[in-house]
Amino acid sequence: MAKILIVDDEEGIRMLYSMELQDEGYDVITLPDGRELLSVVDRENPDCIILDIKMKDFNGLDLLQQIRKKYYDLPVILNSAYSSFKVDLKAVAADYYVVKSSDLRELKEKLKVALETRIPAE
Amino acid sequence: MKFIEDNPDGITRADIVVGIPSYNEASSISYPTQQADKGLKKYYSDKSAVIINCDNHSPDNTRQAFMTTETTTPKIYISTEEGITGKGNNVRNLLAKAVELSAKAIVLIDADLRSITPLWIRNLGEPLFEQYQFVSPLYVRHKYDGPITNSIAYPLTRALYGRRVRQPIGGDYGFSGELAKIFLETDAWSDSISSFGIDIWMTTTSVRNHVAVVQAFMGRPKVHKVKDILQDSDTLFSDVISTIFELMCRYENFWRDVKWSRPTAVFGFGVGDVEVPPPVNVDVRLLSQKFQSGTLEQWDKYKVLLSPENIHKLEEVTELSPEGFEFPTGLWAKILFDFAVAYKNRVLAPGELVSTLKPLFYGRILSFVLESQAMNTQQVEEYIEDQCLQFEKAKPYLLERWFS
Image 1 (cartoon, rainbow over the protein chains, first blue to last red):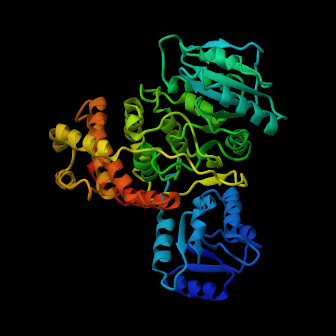
Image 2: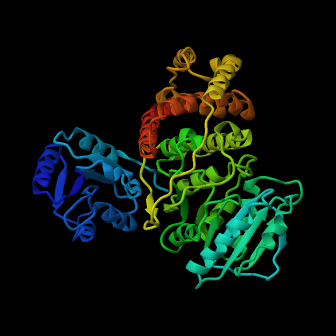
Image 3: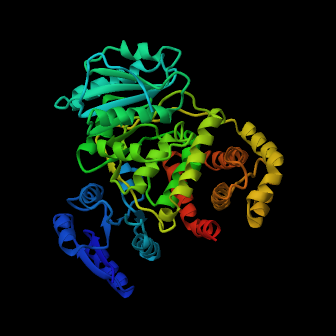
């Protein structure tokens, strides 16, 4: 069972995503901000992170840079209510960028693809 | 490969090397040399450094222009023997020299760069002193600049090898001394790799060898000589496409197992405002003419090279009016895959096959120009991302044709 880490400062979003993704068979863990992100990733070893961008004290794009420095190949899906952050080149380091919606089909589809992605090992 | 060397300071070791490949760049090489010198002084003052011009024995005296450029960093001039040209040959000589100098980091920049700043040297070099081994450039380009990159090299490389490297033939790179050894030890240096195929070869070899790749944000757009889509030399097109197809044959056991694609980390933010790239003009009428006349001329070959389904769809495309012209992305991807399969099966001689593709490339560019007329840079990037996804989705078609 793939383990998904959701990082979002909105409790409603964390609950909605958790329920929807658990229904799809995923194991879900959540964080309300980026404070302990790297240590949680270290400990929980998630298969994919769904990362909000505009959080109260954190910028998801900066967190993405930190993730990439340490976890070069960990799938990350940026998830924001705003499409405008797509113009920020930092977003290039994410696997996918999905604009928030109550319809989670796009997010689920991208999550599936992110988990399926394969680059053969040496 | 032997090279001629002028090393007036007798440099025998260097932590970082900036290499500038050239052929007849006497009028332009001083500027990037000066910027490299400034970058090395500002950001690598604690490291030993050298600037190397790797040249093709240019008759315009590039050597003198380079060696007389005032720098505090020592300079070395190396050249292929007279009569041997090709960027790839220059890079190969640079690799050998950099390994000889025990360089930890090598930064490669074009000799005709007009927009390079010292920051480019930092951004292309610094990741090499961290965990990365290959640094590819990331710059904002005008939507019509880099048509081979946007329509072929980026989507194909991404779909084949699974790594999103936005400028796989960007021309400006950084790589570690370790990777330089891997490059040198790679056996087959074909004619196309020894020429303009070198860039896509380095990118593909890096991804294939699982080295840590990062994209360095340059801040300024790449401004250099030319560029008109129709004036992009036949050699560039031919070398890049031949190299891509050749590497597909060589690495088929690697890319057959790649599914979808992964992003590449980005380095080098905080460079201030990003400048708008200079405009690139496109002659739509001429593109249309070249597509129409070229497809007519090559039609019999297309009937042999393309699958029946694709030849039928291509026929529909040729019948479209200039105002409503569109060359669908999915068809373009499958046509490129058909050509790759034909290259593998030697249906035509490689050179002939690649030149047969060119009218279709003009058609695809025409379609892109018409579709993107009202788009801004960001919208074009989204268009290109969507195009890449379509290439990735079409990959099962390639697998079926290639391995059946």
